[in-house]
Image (cartoon, rainbow, N blue to C red; front, side, top):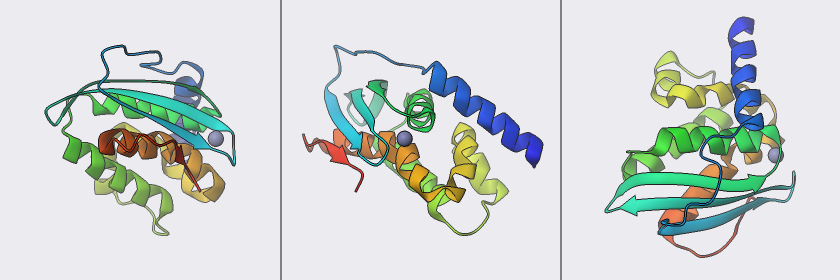
Length: 151
Ligand code: ZN
């Protein structure tokens, strides 16, 4: 398992340093802001929703490697997903980070690249970093117009 953990760590550091889909998205029709005061992470999420299909998604912001990597990986996985699939994925991801039980192989497979965050469950404070992007996504889909604060 330690090799796997190392690989996971590398993916997180890579996405944290070089976030994918980072920048403005002028044609976005859904937007939300998220703030994690415990760590200082801030993100703005831009989504192009076509019917119930996520056509494009980009984000901007600053924060720790975990928050940036999580938002980055989230954007790479969301394109082409329906709104319902995106919300279901967040629930699975949230379970992975908060459950006391070791994740099953099926669970990890369903989460695809997001499985790299499975080690975060050992650091409860970092769970808020890893889920900030996703909470912000829900706010964008719900069109709440409010900044998500993870507390
Ligand atoms: Zn953080």
